[in-house]
Image (tube, rainbow, N blue to C red; front, side, top):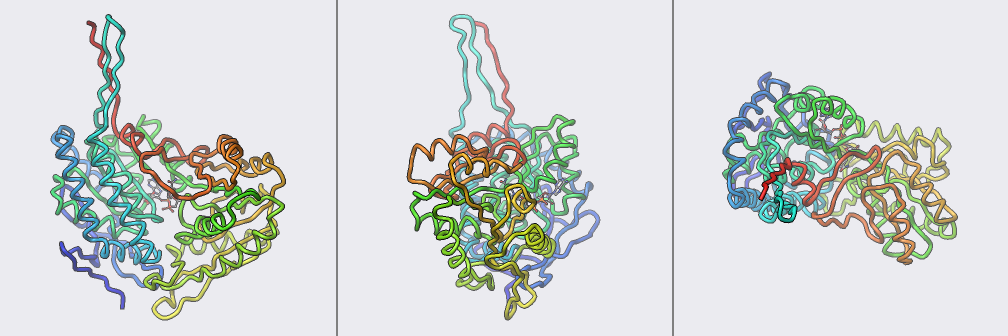
Length: 494
Ligand code: NAD
């Protein structure tokens, strides 16, 4: 039996009915309507999520309006103290939060414990300290005048996040927004709401003043779109699909809102024959299938130099075959469940399309029946496909699952051409021991993030974001604090 209630140092409990967090109070949605919250590894409806709408958004904005005057001038040391306390409480409740994340998302529990939840506390700690060091420019006009730039909070801002790294990405937006002195209306994915709810409880415990952070649960069309369209909300930080990003931009841009859009990807892994073979193999397996391939930074198009193509194919398929999906609560499961029925159907549809397009399935390609409590779970075998051209839909459209294609190239120019064929431009990996080539290729791949001989090595100070259909703007470090502040220049004649 999977526990649905957790007891820990502060009695963090996963309820059967999740509440919105508005004005510091946990409350039911105005409509009193709920959506089922399903554990994808078991198929069980284990809680219910508020199906909030514009009325709940209005209430949250009203609470944020009341809170903003005081929070925006709260000394940075005090903001630091509260955000740091939130980080500490996340650490103290690691086990309960990790279990909630796994039950919502289907990812292995060891992954939630090792990556998702520790990163959520790092996000708070990083921006708590960051704001203490955030400085602004001054420009001297010799003996005529001095200019200095004030960086003031934007006001009330909206943060909307996806289901693949639920608390990790939710806090990646909320922490800099709060640190910079904004009040926040935040919406997690309706598919994975539990850890955002538990964060509400943590914020109450940490002493975050009422109305500074408001967390509303609901769908994109009913709740997310009401946040985006609300005239009082001045900036939208969004992570999710390119489709939703386009819809959000269409509403927010004519209202002259600041927008930061972190969208989809179709990331190339470019593998040259002179790479460090073992490291490349180990890492490419991770970059293909971590979190069931449901990380925006996963490499889904593997481009391999022709001279090592056959060797790569044989070894990659053999290693991927060992990643058998299983119960996410079992420490031995390398892969967990796919997040939802909708997404599971989409991935299987993409595999069918790859077959119709003439692709050869080298590994997987099918759904997998779970065992024991996971009999009704949503599992898909790690899947490797070859024999498809760069321009087919399988190689152009994001699948966002445990599915990769492999293609070969003869020259560096051909590798670049294949890499840049995509409409997306989020991340790329380059595997070579030739430092000149690594620099040359890194400069030419159309992508916001490049990893050379590594993957997912993250320094939170670095700019994070994509080009082309992968988004607009950058998160991380000062970029995030600049996004969540308005620059005001003050010129004083001497
Ligand atoms: P999604 O776009 O369906 O939903 C993301 C969030 O936006 C959810 O909270 C959803 O309720 C909300 N939403 C949906 N439509 C909306 C609308 N019109 N207005 C306002 N809110 C709306 O994405 P998803 O399926 O949850 O997540 C998977 C996608 O996220 C993939 O495309 C993946 O590449 C992308 N992603 C990108 C990054 C990145 O940093 N670039 C990181 C993680 C995931």
